[in-house]
Image 1 (cartoon, rainbow, N blue to C red):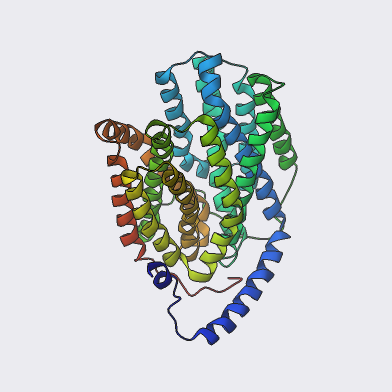
Image 2: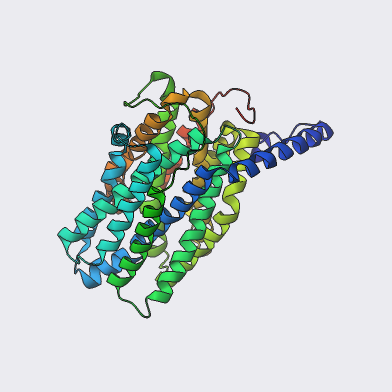
Amino acid sequence: MIILVLFGFTDLNFKKNRIENKDEKSDLMDYMQKAKTDPMYRYLIVFTICSSMGIQTWLTLFNNFAVDIAGLDGHHIGVIQSVREIPGFLALLAVFVIMFIKEYRLSALSILILGLGVALTGLVPSYAGLLITTLVMSFGFHYFETTNMSLTLQYFDKGTSPWVFGKQRSFAAASNIGVGILIYALAFVLDFAKIYLLIGGLIVATAVWGLAQDPTGKEIVTQRKNMIVRKKYWLFYFLTLMAGARRQIFMAFAVLLMVQKFEYSLQEVTALFVVDNIINYYLSPLIGKSIIRYGERKVLSLEYVSLIFIFLAYAATTSKLLVAALFILDHIFFNFSIAIRTYFQKIGDPRDIAPSMAVGFTINHIAAVFLPAIGGYLWVIDYRIPFVGGAALSLISLTAVQMIRTPVKVHGS
């Protein structure tokens, strides 16, 4: 019933709604087809695939490589994981970089740096070497994510950008599956260094191709080249901060719960990730369409209502099967966060998109600086505390999204 109310299905005038919905679907299909022919759409999809391949390769191989080949211990790995978040915290510096190079070229350059970081990882099996290559890889990954958000909001209108974000998430999920299968196959014939070098090299080659492209194709609003922090964007900043905190709880403790409390094996965790990515490949575009149809407030309300129950269930469950279902649901609702970006597109000055996405990405990573450490301490006291805290954060976010007010949606605007 909560979901029905949130999405407005209690309207009794069903016949009128069906006619209006048919017209809306027709308009959306037209704008989706138009978006697919935009050179920027293809450009960003190609680099989204590269970005997903790079980070997934690094994540898949890192722990085994760090322990078995580089001989690192838990302390070393913890420091390296913290270093990996530094570029996300420094994403606001992208504002100053685009003073000197065009933003779409910064996207290609970021993918190039990401590919170099991945390719070099296997060649330096030492603590210092992995610190450096992790930093390089992470700068490329985080700066591409920043420019990708900005360029999507600049080049696609308010009635299309949620679907484009959804398609990007869909291709990212497919890339995760593909690179997982590729690594599994390559592991039989290649060592760590060669796998890193091969996949990193493919990413570098694609980035070189991208540097030779010009996907702009049309005039857009000139972006401000300085850091922008405005009082009227406070709700966007707050929701972005809370989304970052929720992301950290999911990343740091959901898998830990499965492994430590429910004794999931490596094969079971891997299978769960595959199932999760298959589901998100199909659902992500639908999430984008839902944002277009129902609006950011309803979609985000559904996310946070659901997360309250998901986090509380994490804390209470004793079922190995249920915790797997919760993990998949958690990841599905994570994709709802694209509504925070499209909310900004509707209320922000078009000239503020690039600097605001950079500032927002930094805000999103504030939680990464302290939350895993605090949550780890609370986990030692009682593993349920971080999840109860996640439910509390979701309740706060649910309250905040009720303040979302956007102009009436119009395709092509």
